[in-house]
Length: 147
Picture 1 (cartoon, rainbow, N blue to C red):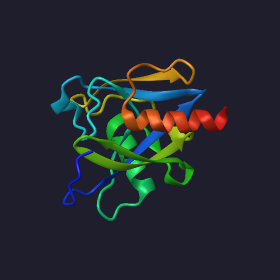
Picture 2 (spheres, rainbow, N blue to C red):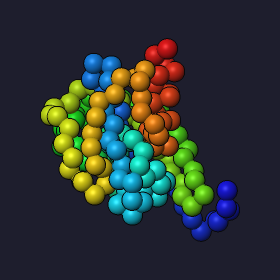
Picture 3 (cartoon, rainbow, N blue to C red):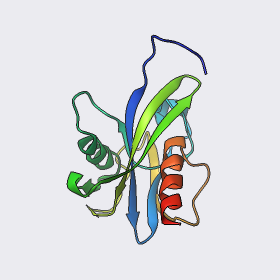
């Protein structure tokens, strides 16, 4: 890892939306510019999520990102933190808070077609490849806890 004291890690949230033992994942655009992530992952499957805004509560960020990306409404009181990960790639570094959401309203819709091209439900024992770095870590921690 490149050591640069002028760079600071960011904070992100990822939300594992679970229904009937299936997780909601979105296909990131294959064009890196459109996939729009400092952690890269173009063409991978991802949970709804994104960056924490200045002065924003973690749960509010999670609900905002879920709605902005999928049109699904979730309640901040119903979210559960299930992971905290230190995510680093060559040119970026984020601390990601992983949430579990089992109580929500609506069906997923593509709200940002330049970023996410489709949403699908996947069985926890039959996940697609590749999975976005942060989403994969959240899934692994969740599956380890229920196994």
